[in-house]
Length: 360
Image 1: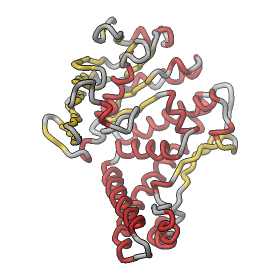
Image 2: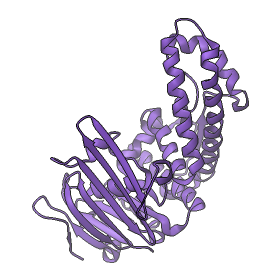
Image 3: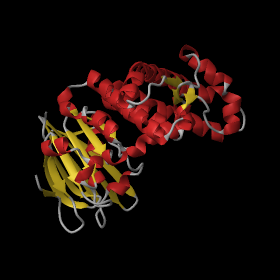
C-alpha cells in the first residue's frame, strides 16, 4: 500500500504542519484537537470540498488570510489554496506544480469517508443524499463533473428568469431548458448506473455486517423526471407551476434515493444499530464502486471516529476493508481500536499544547 505526505499551512487550527503517513495511521486525541481536520484536508484535496462545511472560508486559520493544503501520493502532488482579501475570495489548485482548473482538479486521487455523522444519508433530508451521489460520481467521472457544472449554470439562469418574468416567455426560457435537458440527461444516466451498482450489492453487504439478522434491503432512485428522453416536455409542462414557485421544481436537483428494509422506509423503520449497519454496508459498497473505476493505490480510506460508534461485530467488518488501501483512522482513545489493528498502525497523538507527535 502507498504512503503519503500531508502538508498544511494556516488550515483551521494547524499553522504549520507536515506529516508522513504510513499505510495504516491512527490519530489519537481529545475532541476538538484537530483529528478530523487532518481527514478533512485530505478529503478537500481530493474533491475540492469539505465534508464538514459548505463554506471554504472556514478552512482558513485564525488571523490568516490564506490556507494551503498539499499532498504527495506516489507520483502525484496536489495542492489547494483558499484566500480571502476583504470581500474577495479565491481558490487555486495545482497538480504536480502546475496550475489546473477546478474542474480538472477533482478526483486526481480518491477518498472514501466513513463517519458516524453520515447516518444522515439514511435519516436526513434529500439534499444530503444528492450531494453524496454527486461526490462519488464527480470523484470518479470527469464527464459527470462537467455536466453538473453545466446543469447548475442553466438551472441558475432559468430560475432567475422565472423570478423576473411576470408572464410566461417561452423564448427566454427555451435555451436554458435545452441545456438543462442536455446536461440533466447525463446526470440521470450516471446516477441511475451508480444506484444500480449499489443496489445490486447493498443487501449482501448489509447481511454480512448485521450478523444477527437477515433483512431485505432495497435501494432505489426517485426521479422527478419520469422519462429522460422527454426531458424538455417535462420542463414545458411544468412552466406555469415553476413560475408560481419562482423555481425549477423538477430535475436531478430535486431527486432523491430511498432505502427500504423489509419493505419499510429505513429512516423510520430501523433502530440506531440497524442504521449503522446500513451505513457501513453502503460505504463498503461505495468503496467497491470506486475500486471498479480507479487504481487501488489512488484510494485513501478516511475513518473519522467510526470505531467508538460500533460494536465488536461491526468493528471487525470495518477492519476487513482496511488491508487493501492506505487508511487514516481517528479516535479519542486507542481502546476503541482492536489490539491487532493498533499493532499494525503508525500512531500520532494530538494535544492542545503541542504539535502532533508520532509515537509508534
